[in-house]
Length: 151
Image 1 (cartoon, one colour):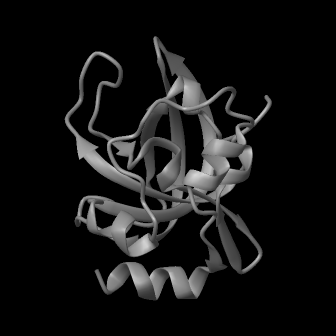
Image 2 (spheres, helix red, strand yellow):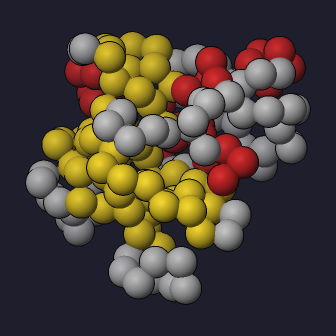
């Protein structure tokens, strides 16, 4: 699967400039591994095996597999990716028969982990306009954790 998001994105209601802003709008921030993915209408459901709860709502623990939903057109995750995800809790519905998390700001709340660093998936944007509008946000995982918990 190509990670690139085609075309110029529609106007977002909010562009997150910092991880503190993302954390402030999130119920949950987790580090984990993408186990598998499924498509439902215009959405992608990624099952994430949680390896660390950075910011929690008390409903998710390490070792648990939780579903994260993002719009198909903004799908950037692949199976086996190690990620940090910012999400908001939603009650089960016709997409998923259990409670799930929706990525905050679509791809804006999705970060790839590489060693001890994380990087927001803005390099997947093909449009120069979009790449300039959404900051990359690259930092150490420890730095991200501290900054998010200070929200």
